[in-house]
Amino acid sequence: SAVVAAFAYARTVQIIGPTRAAIFPAVVPAIAMLVGVPVTGEIPTPLQLAGLGVVSVGLIIALNLVASAISKKADDAIV
Image (cartoon, rainbow, N blue to C red; front, top):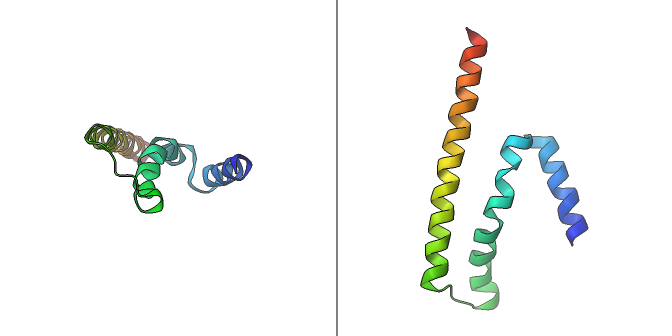
């Protein structure tokens, strides 16, 4: 399964580019925790949910910084 994941990630980088593909490793733990609830029946602890919130906020901040940097770069190219 790791080989399939590596090929899938490489293909994703080709399709959407490295900047956007860099998001995927950051969301894996959150997705694993959320998928684990219905699949295994495990309920996340309050500490795990807090960690999910911190990681999610950090990811949103990082995405906004990347988006603004890309936008600024595009604006600079136009001028």
